[in-house]
Image (cartoon, rainbow, N blue to C red):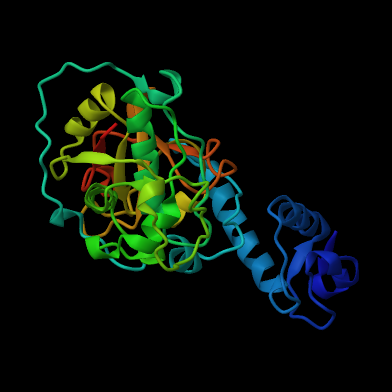
Length: 335
């Protein structure tokens, strides 16, 4: 059955549906029910004037998802917490608004000649990868990539698996060309931790998801960086070696609109760029493998465990997909 949206408003006020008289959106009652179910799942509430706009956006994104999944692709799309948002809005809230030029980072990693294991997953090697976190509506992905890499580095080097303070990096690392919720680079954040002589734990410097004043307390620092390994620009094979032999690796890449709808499978894109000046999101490679002849990276994201594959995604390996090999790095911890 198809109904005009205002006829449904009386039964949907608790979910933030519009008051009668809002602009008509011709949708079926089943689609409206699915939207309300999605709203409950993701704890979404809208003003009366916003509801119809969010519904239209949701239906547009769902149609894009269905069309993609009906085609022949290496990954599938799904609904998630971003399904009521346009990509322009997502970019403003979740990705870097300050351009980050990875080519400014000088490589110092010397690659060997291999061979390397055909697959690696640090999650299966021991208690070396911390749980997926959620950056919220702040372009602080670079801080989560940084803490994730250092948490793993400390654990692999013989320490315990810690939970480190992203908010300290948001608030305190500006002198190393980082910009809080507007963006930054893990390589520069590792340098900050090195020269700052430490980073505090999440429990003593909790995450707020917004820019604030620096509250670092040196006596409460629990993790330290001795050095930073910056992988040569676009040397993806060196990334393989680093992940295989040493540590999960932080990297940045360019997110385009189709990535926001990722659900599972091996992500690839023909619309993203591979140049180091276009990257807008930082993540953590915790392993790699191959499926049906397609090599991939196993990547930890910072959009919560409900996004993608329990907070992770796979992305095609060996093609510098979306510039992922432009600025890879990992920290060498000081225990």
